[in-house]
Amino acid sequence: MRRAAVFIPLAVFLALAAVFLFRIGGDHSVVPSALIGKPAPHLSLPALEGTNRPALDPASFKGNVTIVNVWASWCAPCRVEHPLLVRLAKDPRIRVAGINYKDQPANALKFLTQLGNPFAAIGVDTAGRAAIEWGVYGVPETFLVGRDGMIRYKQVGPITPENLSRLLAEIDKALAN
Image 1 (cartoon, helix red, strand yellow):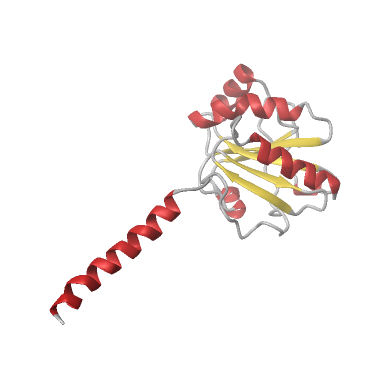
Image 2 (image 1 turned 120 degrees about the vertical axis):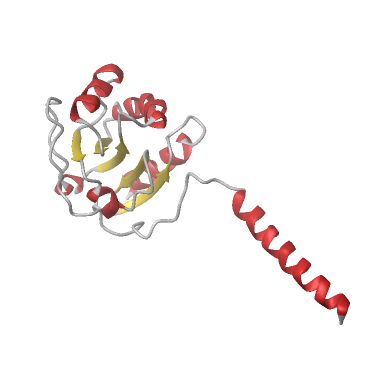
C-alpha cells in the first residue's frame, strides 16, 4: 500500500509530462480556429488615410480569394513577413487585404512607405474590436478567405519562407473551388 502511495503521484507526473511534451512539439503557426469554414466577420473597417486604398469591406471578399493579414507597424515579425506579402500581392489570382491593429496612422503609413504597400484594401482597427471578431491572438495573423466569403485557413505568427508552402497550398485549394 505504501508503494502505491509513492508511485501514483509519480505516474500522474509522468503522464502530465508526456502530455506537455507532446503539445510542445509540432507547428504552432497553425492554430485551430472556430472560424474555419465559417463566414468572415461582417465588419467594415475605415480606410487607412493617406494610402489611396479603400476601406476593408467584407462584401469585397465575395468572388475573390483574399488573404487578410492583421499587422501593425510596432510588430517586429510583421516587418519580417512583409516582403512575402508584397510578393503574394503580385499574384493576380488573389487579393491581399490588411487590418492595421492598434496602431498610430502616421506609423502605419511610414511602415508602408518604407516597405511597400501590398494591400488592395486596408481597414484600421484602432480599438482592437475587429481583431476580437476575427479571433486574433496577436499580430501578425493571416487568414485565407475563399470566393464564397468563408474562412479557409488561419496562420498565427509571421509568414516565413518555411511556412509559405502551406499557405500557397491553401491558396491553390481555394482557387480550385
